[in-house]
Image 1 (cartoon, one colour):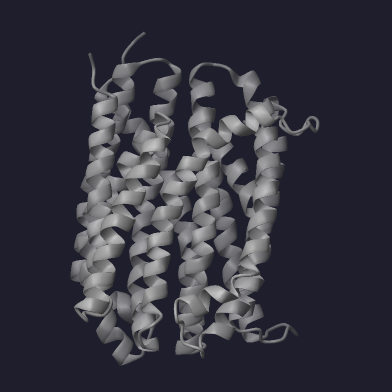
Image 2 (cartoon, one colour):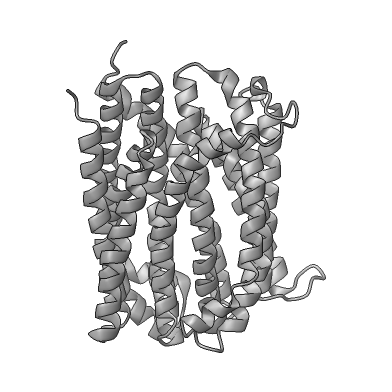
Length: 444
């Protein structure tokens, strides 16, 4: 088998990455729009969207992780030229998506005790509950959207994800405006309208993507919707064997970030808002390495399907190197333009002052954040997901959470202490993930 050149690996990784990065940025921009528009409602609604979004994010990360088994499975079948097996696999994934969506719908609507557990300020809780109950309708179709998206991505048709992500952003802004502020005859629903708008957008995206997989020439021959199959427990278990550890890893990571936000909810509304601004913008930038890491998974998975050990290793290491290079520029942007970022989100001078301080920490953690997600993408490509689960749990909870709590509440450093813990967790994860991929792909 012919080994692919390093130049080819770089070209293909960039080619796959660009639509995925744009897609991730577009998806994240929906959250940014929600945050900016809720900020126009006042500090309490902004804090509520911050906290409600953190809880929503935990569920989303877990669902996303489980279904992240899809791209490496699809790309491996593609690399091995076993296209006839893709349709049956996707039909089982759709059953799994429906089950997951229903379970998380119930959970998101019954999380009120969580606020008391973390001592969230009483004034914020009603707004956060309204937001969660509204956006929970979107979790019913979100897993299906992910399945459809990951099938397209796994087959290297990443542009389709980009187009449908653009559609979501284009719909989100006017829907937010109409439902939040009461336009075109609709009542002003505030943060609840923000949640409903996101749920509607997710449902439309899932529907459109399903139609594309059914009709577009790229996917029509897969016959995904040709018939309905009974649930195949063996097929479902094979997906869960890969996906559950990824889900647990992302749950540990997303849960860590969300819990840090919940810890911040014990502080003043201004600190909550500043924390959300800094974390939200850092999360926007994170979409760049995240999109690139998805491309790494596809490239590595394809090489595994072709049974090329050299290409498997090269695809992963080149992808990690590319992300490291990109992160240097992203960190520099935050260092140079913190005032621009803070002013984009709020006009409250006190919130801006706190946010400027936290954005410094957000710039620092760009490097470790990029490496950890890049190496995680490579590990997903070789289906080494058990390690990801253990490494992420250790990095974020044994190290990150402990450090965050210690500096914030024991040393009384406030939000700055929380962010020191974020940096620690990401750094440990970066080291563990990179060393694991290096070890697993060593050539004999």
